[in-house]
Image 1 (cartoon, chains in turn red, yellow, brown, green):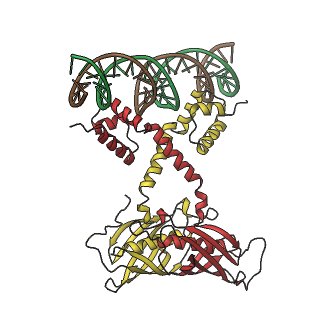
Image 2 (cartoon, rainbow over the protein chains, first blue to last red; image 1 turned 135 degrees about the vertical axis):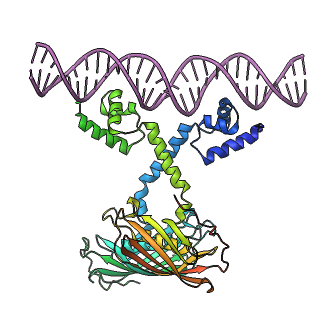
Length: 201
Length: 201
DNA sequence: GTTCCTATTGATACCTGGTGCCAATCGAAA
DNA sequence: TTTCGATTGGCACCAGGTATCAATAGGAAC
């Protein structure tokens, strides 16, 4: 009932809209116990756009991000790829990848980078992970850049399966190690590089 | 200039709005060379909501998914959790989880569900995946619902490490099997799993 | 021909959630 | 008492619609 000061009301208003951008001025009237004109003057002062503008902005944001989602098929950015031989991918650990409590990356993101790379390096139309033996050498933290290196260890000729070793580093430090067995369809793609002994470095 | 048939126009309209949901009726009038009334009758017939409703729906979708992102820390919906004993999580394979080419789920999503569950089932403030030995029994396809069951196999008492076995099914069929070694901080939590009890309902 | 039917267009009233502007009121401080 | 900021009321107007009724054009059926 008691009126808040203008300053307090502005804070309240900002907070309310932040936590629920779908509120109309009329609903805010109810919540803040002031007239709708006051709400509108407040929004004006605080440069909070009207409901429809807010919704539009949200819709635009989500629309744009949906459009760029196909890139998300591969976790990490592949910077080097020699089919059936080796590959390198970069992946930076950001806020959405870590436990909020500890700032340590969830294991499956590190795995996802390695897995994506292991699959990408296989020169075949269809490549699926059959199994993997993995080890997290040390936790990876917010902001760290993971460099995953994949080496195809055995047989593009071998029927159906390839072994891929992936080691992920932060700087010089090894943070992840995985041995993947990748199932592949029989047909290799165009430039059928028969590199069966394909070991590198 | 030449008029399209109604059927053709309806197809056009659907397509236009699909690729740009921000179009007003007036703009559609320009694009389809019919009156605004016709556009509106068409939308009515095709049950395409008005611009504002479309924007609102998009905003809601994005808002909900943003709000549930912290929950997204866990891939899959945990439906049962007995700390240090067992847990069950559900995860439906959707468009964004599959290879667009084959409709088969990327391995790391299936892994992520299992990994999330393995970590969640540990009754400890900090729990991290140390290593894992996993096997993909068969590919999982678009639309399939993965039911992951986790069993803690050894020692909440044991210092530092717990073994968790996770088996994922689609229906009766086993699609994934993993043995996780989870690193845990010494201190078990009281009664509640404060960190990540957040399920989506 | 005429009738029937669909598709299209026009016109009007009304709705929500606002903006913009002007005037009135209230309360406290100078 | 005057003055001033804060608040409120009222009204015109706007976009982007819904809802409804009427008018018109063009074929196909009889």
